[in-house]
Image (cartoon, rainbow, N blue to C red; front, side, top):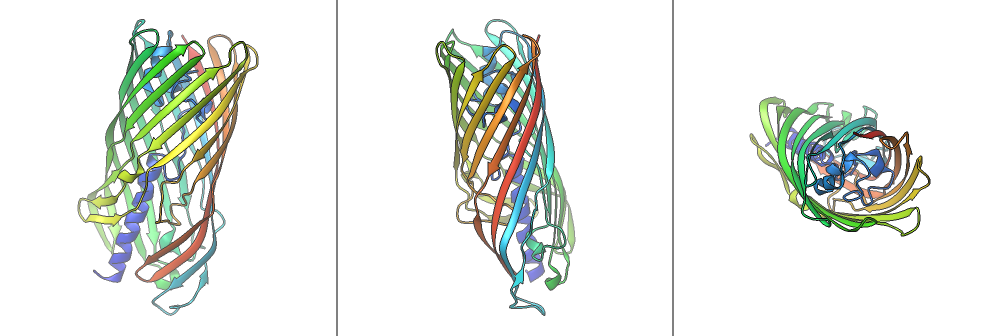
Amino acid sequence: MNKHKQLSTALLAATAALASTQVTAAGFQLNAQSATGLGRAFAGDAVIADNASVMARNAAAMALFDETAMSLGLNMIKTDINVSNASYSPSVGPAAGASIDSDYDNAGDTSYAPNLHLIVPLNEQFAVGVNLYSNFGTKTEFDESFSASEYGGLTDVKSVNLGLAASYRLNQQWSIGGGLDLVYGAGKLQRSTSTYLGSQKALDVDAAGWGLGFNLGTVFELDNNNRFGLSYHYSPKLEAQGDIYYSGVTTADDTLFMPLPDMAEFSGYHRLQSTSFAVHYSVQWIGWSAFKTLESQANGTLNEYQWKDAMHFSLGGTYYLNKDWTLRSGYMYDQSAQDQVTSVSVPDSDRQWFSAGFTYHFDEKSNVDFGATYLLGKDVSVTETSPGSTLNATTHANALMMAVQYSRTF
């Protein structure tokens, strides 16, 4: 295999890996299920059930509704990705051995992700629901000013999750639920070698595919003011078909197999007796160790990874100010999925979430929610190599998320 083909294959693996992580909202985890959850850092979201969006976290919580409920929202995600202390060193060509400054101010972008949730109780025991939302909505792009272009380029990936679910109330305390998740992912990925290596197109991928997952959950209600929720989401291996250009050749209708992580979440909600204040919390496990290799039908194993399982821990509070206003806030500590292997294209790190939001009730049947979160990442040292160059850098990724949502019962 010649150097250009080795470089192109490595780049394909790295960028397709980013596609898979962001499609499932991990690696650089950005949730976009609801404005309500965003305003409390998703603390307690598998059991609070203050609107229909809860079905995205725990289908069993649909049993808490005695009226048809609908929520419609829009999330805005603005990422800020910086590369500093960056040194790019070509090992071939006229600049071989040189150390070239490759700092980059901002590779992030602004994306929008809508969501829709509908819960329909059929009787006192059964409820069904359908929802449509995205676990991802961001874009990463390095323009031509980035010296180490084979490690940057364009990554534009989107996903849509169509969910169908049902719940059953066993008795006054226990409810169970489950559903199917039809996940569609689409990505456009482009890379080229740097000017020091000839400015040749190395990668151009335009692929899309489907996967089928499922979810299970349960809710235990101690009383009206105290309840717990537990849910599990099985995530599919996406099969993305599309044309892939690398090493000067376009492979038509190739298939990329991208494993996605399973997730399990435990949540609690406690409204303090004789007060207007509630506390809530969540612990979520994300099985990122499933992402060991990236494979192509035409090329076999493209690359291997050393990803690890990750956790997030969130704590929040809700203040029911009066019949018109509800205030909330939350904090989350969100662990990185990466271990020893890091990348400029996947600027992952442990993250802190600082969240706040409110609900305004128009009447007993309808309300509007607003939520905002600032995600603060950490500096991460990165060393990447390919046939022809080496990049040493420090990456830092922050994000601002804001969301609005309208909810109504019928």
